Image 1 (cartoon, rainbow, N blue to C red):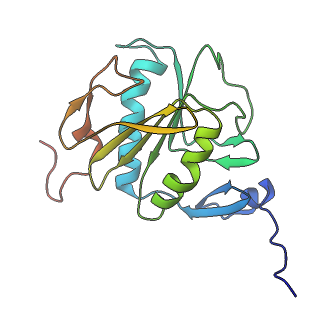
Image 2: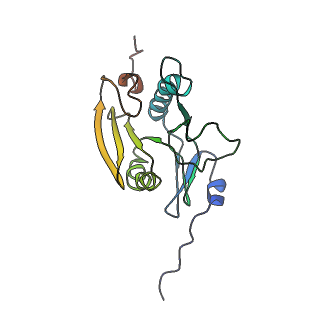
Length: 193
């Protein structure tokens, strides 16, 4: 006898996942991982605040975007939870009062950790490409790097990798400078002053 058919994961599997887990359905399979560690959360939070101040709220920058932390996205049968996602306001003028979005973002950011790096690179990036997400950033707080990808046809092209203490302008948010050092964990005993 052949192998038994493997049941495809459903949204009910996401709902039934433990509260302390992030659950996603990618290519019909359920993937779960623990809530992010502090370096991961710090990088996502600082980046979200910097971009949100200038682009979501339009204070000190051009505005024109809706930016969300960990939105649940339902895209073509897949359920994804990027660390940060953004929509140009002309594509999503206001947020609907629903638990998840079915409109692909224009920007997605994944903060990499040891437990998610393979899923983020190998499984989620092809879904973002299929859904025509124009830009994807991969942020690695331990390596202190940001990789910026731009959709080029059916796949992504690496535009630039920046890191360390650089002050940079990164597309599609190159209207403002970002101090990368603000996202990285401080060495123990270093209070940042």
